[in-house]
Image (tube, rainbow, N blue to C red; front, side, top):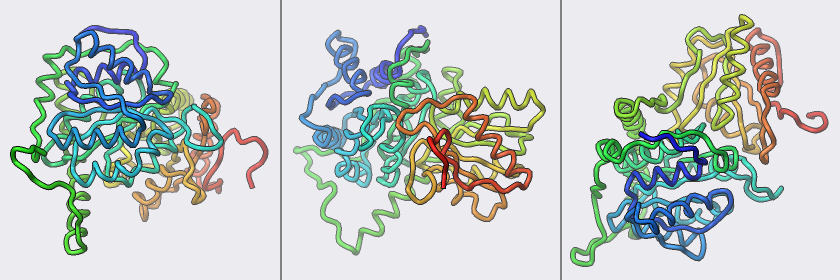
Length: 391
């Protein structure tokens, strides 16, 4: 392996190259543009044997990706924010057709208040499109998860598309040292794509035909079962990848100092790095704090979380987007998973629109969760660093 100092976007591009993606449709949108620029350079320099297809919009990008994957080739693309929104219709073509497309999403705020900075309100709302979703913490994880994503998506028990989500600018444009695996190592982990069905004019078949009510329920059920099957495949892939590279990510989520914790926080993305430092500070002060770095929103690890949180008195959720039901989407998922467990769950929104998240802010979150663990009444949902007072 060689260590290169590269951005998160470049790490994603290296992952796609090492995975031997064969077709890459693309359309530029900040902050993911560097991904497809880097891939086009790899192809131009003869380092990557793939067809780069510039499209006229993101809707066309996903249409090309669907067609290419249906044609039996390993397909990768990337987008962000409004680009993902413009793909919306075709997201629902890829998943039920069981096409294992891998797409990087550089998370960025969507819609007004217009901005180009990190927020999870672009990818989280499409968690019900049938795609698997994984969120990464650093550039190394971004590269590794692109490779793992193909392995998970193409498993015969799954055969579903997957989004690899990374915080825009915080990762996409910040350089870190990243171990680039040898091609031979990746080839052992990720064999050549063997599609189940292929669109081939020499052997015509029909894909995604009009489905009458007599079969639609069964189609959705099978899709739901495939998402459930991914839970096992994700764990297997994580273990096999660790055996080859020494890097293990915990599968559906990573627990940090949770064994004897009395209270903890759970959340997605780069926030976990700050939270890990705060947990260490609190532990040094004798407080039994813990952390759950949530990695997958789909499949959501409900059963696994119930088991992992058995000894907690209180759990806080970190949300970088709002669900407009009074809480954020991570809280909604976690509270549903822990329903009836007796654990007090509170929500903590911060970092909206790319606002910085500080260690002091995360300490405030832990402070509220600790108080709820002691039985004190605190707000069910707190917007941190809000200008003005909450109602």
